[in-house]
Image 1 (cartoon, rainbow, N blue to C red):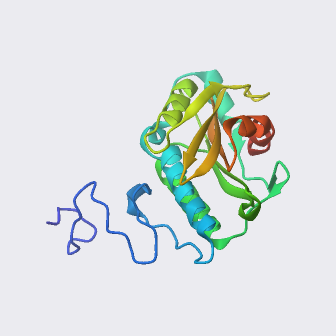
Image 2: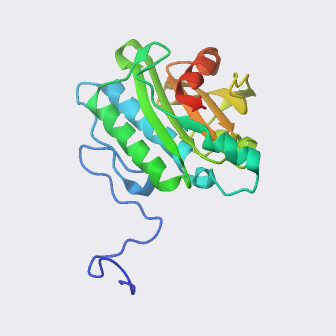
Length: 233
């Protein structure tokens, strides 16, 4: 039944929390915020399909649940200054890897950026991209946003305790010259190893996911990659 003020009063209303049925030839929307379906994978590439599914799962981890409250107002001048001077960007290359050009991957990235902009409050910049070559099992995804972060430790706690990915061997790591807190750990989805590192400081939150790699391998490149994503003036 439509409610007063509904923009489309004659449209059938879907019960809250109910996801639409999977579409033939595409992906089921489970795990994708708001039920938005992912684009179909190329039929010739099973790896491409798996990567897209994993990307969607990580997107939920990054942009759903607690991440909606990443950036809340806090009366702390030093924190506000750091946040104001912090931006994130998707560089042309990441630790020597070019941006991936596969249309299916780009479609997921575009959806990820749109979702981050719609759910992260008071953000000043967002960055999302995929780098490397899936055929060589060298693929990296980044997702980051800048803005005032009131509790960096809490953000990392929520990132690594989400229900969508089972993490193991999670440990604090050197955050690098940009400071804040950082952790890396291992995960797996659809038989693919995932090395995941995330950081949080007073001006940004970000995650780096290395497919087909371990958390230790992600840690080895984390500081370099973060330095290319996060910029502070």
